[in-house]
Length: 325
Image (cartoon, rainbow, N blue to C red; front, top):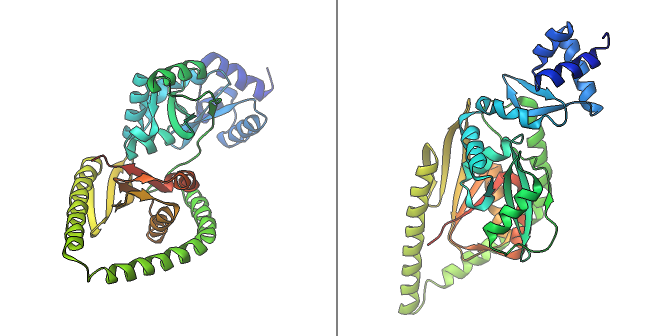
């Protein structure tokens, strides 16, 4: 068999997913030439490659060999491995019930965690299924979890290609994400101006409310007490999730978590407001961009209908965690 592509196909059929250097050794070609051949085969859809990397190289495999990737789960970093093992055990996980760290880990482990978007009474909810579980099996489990609340609308699977920026990430990927952020910032300039006007109006109202009747002063004291309790509760939760929590303002913190070979950093903002609208989301997102960090907003309130739709624009650069009383 003289054709190197045919040799590669036969090798993968016999051995399953393999690294470029293993394939190069088998077809007796230099690694550089082998990598070029593999790229052509991926482009022509003869081969697939994994999101998982061993060293700096992905695994190449033939369609239908996805389940053979399972033996490489141990090669994931510790946080991603824990997330995948949890998903494997549970089969289905609901995204908004997970901690921010696990949510990010599942998005990075794309070979093993597959997203499903489900419409429940007009609200879109993301579930994660273990990759070897079929869509039909996943739908049945989701229906059982929701106890019949799943709408009759068709459940569609959509690939989620969102990754959060990490320390020591490749320069090219950083530039790509920064370029994407800059494009979003251009579209948010007008919204930022509107938010600033709204803030000025709110500050003016707050000044006017300084001279109020005694009962209104009592209400403000009660509100401040609630805000203090919320901040204390959020700080405790952040300390449980992150290695370090650095206070930069009364309701703002920089939180750090070691992951694999790097460190993940979040700007964590506490929002004590009953209804969170799209203007609130734009404001905290802009603060994150100014500090070059993704944002985790913690709130005891709820998102308005427009804010829920608006949130998807930011991907993993803005996460919202709801704090229960």
